[in-house]
Amino acid sequence: MRERHSHDLNGRRRVRWPILAAAMALSLAQGQERKPMQGLAIATFPVAPTAISGESLPFRTVLENRGATPIQVPSPDSPSQFTYELRSQREGGRTYAVSAAGRNRRRAVHVPAPVPVRYETLDPGQRLEWTEDIADFLNEGIEPGKYSVTAAYADGNVISPKTQVTVLPDNVESLSSTPSGSSLASVQAHRRADGAVNILQRESLKDPRETVFYPLQSLPAGIPVSVATTTDVVPAGSGRWFAWLRGRTLAASVGWGDRTIITPDPVNLDVTQPELLSPGYQVAVGTALFGIIDRRGNTVHLLAYRADESGLRRHWTAALTSGGAAKVEWNCQSDGSVTVVWEEPATGRLLSQEFRADGHPLEAAARVRSSSRPAAWSVAPSGPLAISVLREVEGSYRYARLGAAPMADPHPIAHLGGVAAWGFNPTAESVAIVAATASGISQTHPGGAWETLVETANPRMMHVFTIEGGASWVEWVQQGYGIRRAKLR
Image 1 (cartoon, rainbow, N blue to C red):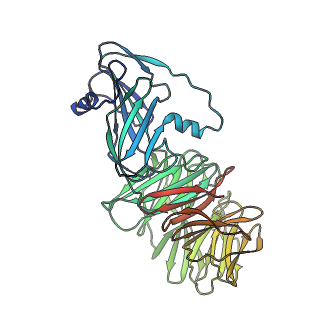
Image 2 (image 1 turned 135 degrees about the vertical axis):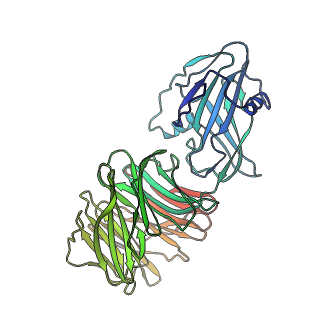
Image 3 (image 1 turned 90 degrees about the vertical axis):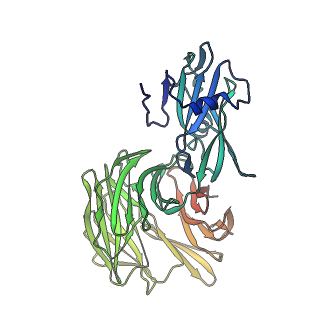
């Protein structure tokens, strides 16, 4: 008989016959540092020998009765009773002590009521096996490196022999991340050491540091991949659509947790220089809208693609400009209408145009939003149109919000040298302005001083956002590590 393996990372299995390899039996018999409960042994092993920082990291943990009499152990239906220690093998490296109980306490909105532990009998020769995601027990990506890992069951006074796992840097080639309701929806393209690309998806909790990435697609080695997740503009049901663009091929999929639900056939684009807009939008139950910018010389078109269970297909096309566009962003409303904003390369002007859900223009011509070249700008991806604009004026900056609720803040913003990326977190009254430089990430408000938020070398792909009903955050890619997040002050 063979053991049946479940794909549920929180699943547990009762094993009534010897199925583990001889090497595992040997490891159970060796290296125990504390006298265990009579006859009880424990071992733990990674499901895979490597994972990237921030990715799911499941471990198999086994309790075995190697004695001659029955033992009372926690039921698999009870909360996990194990504590895991990950100890870096590098001198001065990190040590993590994690458990399901610690994760649950951290995530609880209120002080949780204690859940009684139920016990059952483990007869001689029997084993119980759990699969637990120890990366999900943390609220940060594990620092890359090699780790020795042990599992401890305190009530049984047993600790497992050491096993090893390697956490690799998250080599983020492309990242799309956007709030959707009370969570942060994210998708990334990770370039592996062998040149292949894994596409991973993540849905956070209200604290965007909570939960992990799951690999949902694997692509062979080749040219760069760009990705786009989606944000709900209407209640869209379970599942999160995401898309990826490689060369002139657009593909999309809908996933949730560690499951891929639908992956329609990809489409080949008849375009010259395609660019995938981020994010896309979930515009109906099980339905997503993605945008491709097609550049043919100075002529720029928007190609809207619709994805649902029937497939991925062209929805509509609109001409934006014949004068070129240095940067293009868009905003979507709950009725499926979109507003596209772009910057003219020659003049620096910001222009916008509105389109109905079927692509029909709501305006006869593009509207001029700003007549001079901004230092930086961005568009809120959904909700009332809001364009954050930063202008350089006589050695300092001024902030203005354009769109449905315009606002100009007269207070100067001190000049900051070497800014590689800007981020904006507007509120009804003011705005937090975030800047990434070679030495880290800083924050200020109009009329205030710059304050260092994070000291880190050359942060990339910085993104500033607010979780609905929660706090405001900044996330970035840290070279040699992966995706990091910090709360704005």
